[in-house]
Image (tube, rainbow, N blue to C red):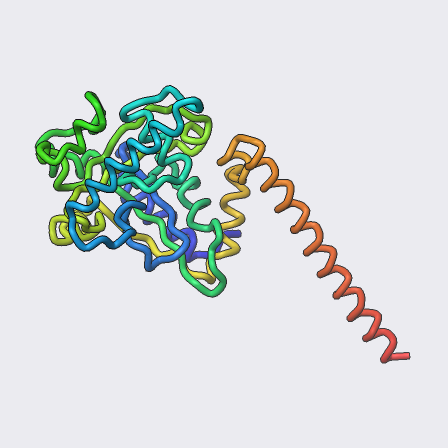
Length: 265
């Protein structure tokens, strides 16, 4: 049976959802982490330096990966993010279970993790004045041109090209961070939290067993999230480690029982 605290969290997620299909989730393995993209974790002094670095990173990747991929513009940006290049993209998912997997991934002992909930339509309405996703068109280099400031000040919910098995398996979506160098939760002076467009659910360490049982119940594993040889290898290693841990526990229990029995003879 799941604990009452875990059931309360599931109810909290359902309450935020409220029948609205447009809800995105993001899992973080430490509750203290902010909603900052990889690029903005560089902590540069001048905001303009971020755009300069962004253009340089994009052009360098495009030139050096030419024989590896013919993707260009936004599609190339998604590939960059997929392979860990620092961009202004922030990963989200349409699945709570997927977000929970990433929150629990490398979850530090005795710490709390967190799952963020976002209403992407509500976010874009604040920026665009209309409901809907930001669908990329035109060249990405044009978008990050310093003269094109209309859509760069605040974060936007972006509907990506589903151009890899991983993004499909993870039901991946993105926000693209604005150039103001502020985490999403701090944009609009924190009003996104106050108005219910954004919500943070802290998952305390005592719920660790509930989390892993919930993930197993939903068929979430390394291989389901990373449907490639790397993901399969991670799953096999995890299975092996679990079997060894169980055997050690059984051996320890057997040793204790033998010791108790021996002391009674």
